[in-house]
Amino acid sequence: MGWMIVLLLVGGLVILVVGAELLVRGASRLAASLGISPLVIGLTVVAFGTSSPELAVSVQSAFSGSADIALGNVVGSNIFNILLILGLSAMITPLIVHQQLVRLDVPLMIGLSILLFLMGLDGKIGRLDGVFLFLGLIAYIWYGIQISRKETKEVKQEYADEYTPPKDEKQPATFINVILIAVGLVFLVLGSNWLVEGAVSLAQLFNVSDLVIGLTIVAAGTSMPEVATSVMAAIKKERDIAVGNVVGSNIFNIMGVLGLSALVAPDGINVAASALAFDMPFMIAVALATLPIFFTGNLIARWEGGLFLLYYVAYTAYVIFESIQHHQNREILTNTMFWFLIPFTLLTIAITVVQEIRVLKKKSLT
Image (cartoon, rainbow, N blue to C red; front, side, top):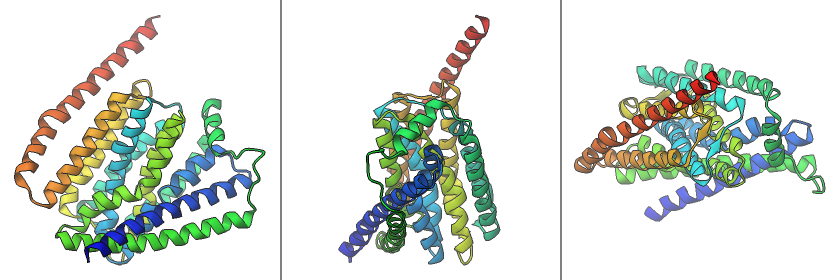
C-alpha cells in the first residue's frame, strides 16, 4: 500500500513536470511563429504554462470532491514561490528589477491575496467568486499585453535573448508544436489524476487533512516548473524573468487556478478554519514582505533571499507539527517565529526603508 502511494506521488509529479515542459515549449514556439513578441510570450505563455501543474491538480481535486487540496495547493504554492523560489534565486544572484509590470504586479498580488482571504471568510469560495476571479484574469492578461509595449529596451532584450530561437536553428513545423501542446495537456491530466489520488491516500494513511498535504507536498511538487524557470533565469542573470515568473505565477494561481477550481467544484471550495486562522494570513504576510523590496532600489539582496528561505523552513515545520499535534515542538517554533524572526524581519525592513528615504532626500537636495 505504502509503495503504491509513493509511486502515484512520484509518478504523478514527474508526468506533471514533463507535461508542463512540453506545453510551454510547444506553446511558446507556436506563439513565436505567429509573430508574438518574446516579452508577451514570457509574460503570458511561459508564466502561465509553468503554473499548469497547479491548474491541473487543483481542477482535478475540486472536480473529484477533494477541494481542500485545491485550496492548499494554491496557498501553499504562492508561499513556496516567494519564500523558496525567490529566496533561492536571490541567493544565486541579487535580483535587480527593471520590469514595469512586475512593480505593478506586486501590489496586485497583495490585493488578490487579501481578496482571497475575504472571499473565504464565509467558509467557501463559490462559483460566483470563481467567475469574478477568472474574468479578472482575462483583464489582467489584456492589461499585461498593453503595458508590455512600454517596457524598456533592456527588459525587451532580456526576454528576446531567452525566448527568441536562434536564426540558424531549424524550427519545427506548426503541427509538431500543436502535438507538443496536446501531449503536454494529456500528461498534465494523467499526472494530476495520479498526484491527487496519491495525496488523498497519503492523507488517509497518516491521518492528516487534505489541506496539509496540499500546502506541503502537492504545492512544492506542482511548483517545480517555476523552480526550474526562475533558478535558471537567475543563473543566466535574467533577473526580470526570475522575479516576473514568480509574481505572475502567484497572480495566475489565485485568479486562474482557484477561479476555475471554484467553477468546477460541485459545491464550491470549502475554506477550512485552520486556513483562515494561519495559512491564508501567512500568505498575505509573505506577499506584503515583497512590497518594501520594490520600494528600496528594486533590489532583492542575498540576505533577503536567505531570510525568505529561513521563513519557508519555519512555515513548513509549523504545518507539519500542527498536523501531527506535536505541541511542544509547535510551541517552540511559534515562539521563535513571533519573538525573533518576525521582529528581526520588521526591524531590518524598517532600517532599509529609512536608509532609502535618506538617499532620496540627499538626491532631492543635490
